[in-house]
Amino acid sequence: MLNVQLNSFWSHELLPKVTSFRVLDQFIACVALFISYSLWRRCFSRLSGPNGEPLPPGPSPKFIIGNLTDIPYVDHWKTFANWRREFGPIVHVRAFGTSLIAISNLKYFNELFDKRGAIYSERPVFTMAGELMSMDQVTTWMSYTKSLRTHRKVDLQALKPEAVQKYHKLQEFAAAIYLQSIAEDPLNFHHTLRRMAAKVVVAIIYGQPLTADDGYLKHAAEIMDMLNTAVQPGRYLVDLLPFLKNVPAWLPLTGFLEEGKLGRKKLMQFIYDPIEQVEREIEDGTALSSIAADLLKELPQESTEESETLKEAITFAVGTLYGAGEETTFATIAIFILAMALNPEVQSRAQEEIDRVIGHSRLPEIDDRDSLPYVTALVTELLRWLPSVRSGIPRRLLKDDVYEGVYLPKDSMICPNIWSITQDPELYESPETLNPERFMGPKESQAIDPGTYVFGFGRRVCPGRYLALNTIFAFVSAILATYTISKSVDEEGRETSLDRITFHESIVAYPGTFPCKFNLRSEIARANFERKLAEGITY
Ligand code: HEM
Image 1: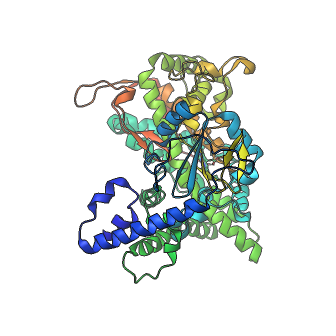
Image 2 (image 1 turned 45 degrees about the vertical axis):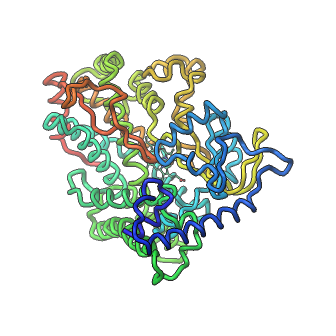
Image 3 (image 1 turned 180 degrees about the vertical axis):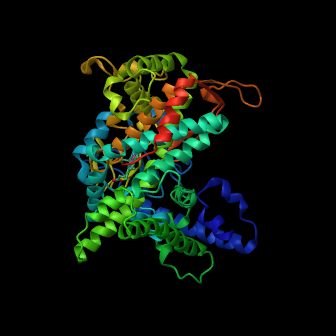
């Protein structure tokens, strides 16, 4: 408890919980240390660029604490959008010598993250989650090192468009299981979607059958919770005062060290256990085709230092994919269900296209995408309408830089404000309207494809985007062919509406459960998914 209080004292709501005098003394000592440290950082922080370029505009800092109270802890995208309106596309805030810069301009994203990728491809350092819990060994949070480049090579080989084609049948089969689960338990559509989206990822990365028990998913949920908490800015004092990681563990108030150790142990189990299982399955000839099995089989028979390094990279690169791919994919499909409940005209137009092109004798397949332009445009519009990763994954600036006449200091945390781009009326007419047609017709007259930025940029662009788009298309087209989704009412009799829905907001944003109805379109539609399930799957 004590550790939680002190480690977390940057989180405003935890401050008043410090009660006993002994704790209070230690708390005051920490605050004193903290203030001295921040004053020291302030003295050594440059406030202008090499030729006197000013820092970007932003909310005025306060004495000692700087912009501490301005920095958002939740819903970053909302604050970033407000800042954009007030201060422009590059906004700077600083607390205790560390700068946070929110960028809200598509051209700037491309110029900084792509063209100046050599200095904009690092991730921020989290002492607790990264160094103590070892999260800096998973692809998403790794430094841009040789090892990260090997991870990305592994990912790109396993997740390039031609490589992910072999999972089409699996993705379509998972969609059919989902259709059946809606028929059996429509009220639970949100929970079963989360479970199914997770199972598809585990089946693809480790070859676990879709029918396997939920053991891995439970373990994964625990790890994700732990890590999501650990990366919350200011959650741990050691993130602010990194030298604390070296203090002896017998000192008071150092429980975070034990917490870090335990976190590391859990993370290592989560990464190593499933890959060791795949190795055993390869040995006894039972391994199903999967990213892990395919990569391990390609390793040279003889163990060398090089092959062991590659195997380690495969273990961690594959171990990252679940966390990176499950919640994001689920979020987009959940947003689709919500969008259909709120936009019946869009839904009936998409259904009309499926009925006309595919007919009624089977479910749509991923390979039908090119003949279903409206449904394809709908998927693109979903990425824009309510993007699931609204403020990207932050970067850390490796060197001082000057851009558009302002000074961007080394080590700043750079946040791409994806949300503001998707809602920019200059790029998208009536951005709040779900309108797939903006992505139809001649290429030159179409709006900017959000797929070019919602998956990130440059050297760190999301390697799982092709796989994600396939899963999303499989679920979206299968649901449209089978059910008509409509608004419903909650326990208090209120109808579904966007402003009543609570969004889960972390790095990934997705709607919490909401009332909606699934009406089976016909008995033929039911027969289609039942036949698919009866045929089973080989891949
Ligand atoms: C709709 C679904 C998805 C969205 C919106 C999404 C979005 C993103 C974004 C914004 C980033 C940060 C890129 C940057 O820093 O510029 C990212 C990174 C990443 N994504 Fe995805 N993603 C999705 C699905 C997936 C899937 C299905 C996988 C794998 C199975 C995946 C694997 C990764 C990995 C490994 C990274 C880290 C890359 C790095 O740091 O170098 N993602 N994703």
